[in-house]
Length: 116
Length: 110
Image (cartoon, rainbow over all chains, first blue to last red; front, side, top):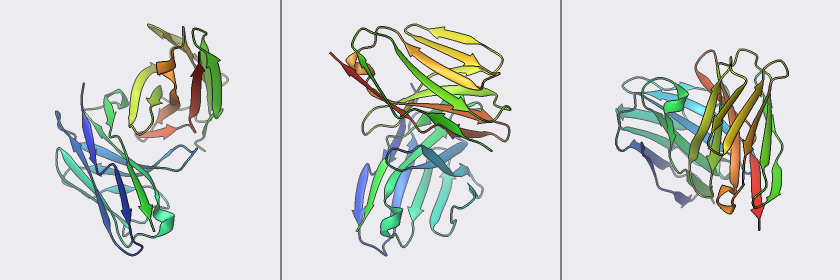
């Protein structure tokens, strides 16, 4: 099946630094990728939709200057958490869609971010 | 508004059937999905159902949809220890957005 690789799987950083998370579709081209955030015992919250070659569409309440998304190619999207603070600590998950329809949505294994 | 709810925990004995329930509020849902998340891993699509269907069966999995009550369920027959995971239901609505439930942690004991 289709594989989505997310890297790193976990990262610890100091408050005020920036962290970049990569999401790659390994064996298919993804025109659309999604970034989610998951808190313990809570659901996945969609942060933004990333389309290749265009600006990401952010959900209400998500700061676009804080969470920078770049989708420079059909196989790579990156999420950069800028000037991270402890409240940004969370599990971040990306997904990539192969064509149309959510039945063709494949998820990365997630990145656990801990900001000290 | 958009809201998808699930009970947080379910514990079953190995070999029994598991039934995970989900309720949603948006009647304009087009598809409804069930995902499985194992520890430290991403979500894996288990099955999905179109909103004009009542039931879908796929091997050990049976999905039931009651559109009138906006209730979705996932039945796992002959539950195994490998089925222990968090199960998320999700709905796709107009506007091309996927809304996830809060997840149900299924624990299977011998």
